[in-house]
Amino acid sequence: MQDAHLSCQSPTEFCLRQALRMKAVGILTLIGCLVTGAESKIYTRCKLAKIFSRAGLDNYWGFSLGNWICMAYYESGYNTTAQTVLDDGSIDYGIFQINSFVWCRRGKLKENNHCHVACSALITDDLTDAIICAKKIVKETQGMNYWQGWKKHCEGRDLSDWKKSCEVS
Ligand SMILES: *[C@@H]1O[C@H](CO)[C@@H](O)[C@H](O)[C@H]1NC(C)=O
Image (cartoon, rainbow, N blue to C red; front, side):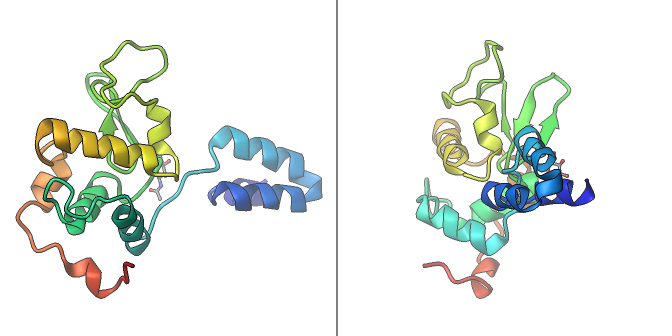
């Protein structure tokens, strides 16, 4: 069972392949993968830089890639499945810790859902929806002040450090 559980920390494909390989506990692993969300993932800084760059975040609304990388680090530690329940009962979701009260739809709760997206779509390893929503936040709130982690640790700093260790095409 230990193995079956651990394999679910990896991306879906690996998880499912593992499930097929392990005949004895295969079915259990498969069920585990489906139930616990096989898509949880901690990205490396360089991988994120590449994904962010391709998604057009570099200099989006004037914010360099370093700002996005720094923000994601202080908000979630690059953890795509990070969730934080706040005092008011709303929840911050995913790598950018996007809040359910204003920005996404949580179950059948009638909240504002400005990003027109299910909150659950913001905690997958496919960052497409999270990035689209983050762009909308920057646009609608006119900057990155939405993110406390960014204000506290990133704003006004030299954030070009990541370039030394990553190659972004
Ligand atoms: C990522 O976030 C999930 C959900 O909050 C948590 O269970 C998991 O332990 C986190 N992973 C790491 C490595 O912090």
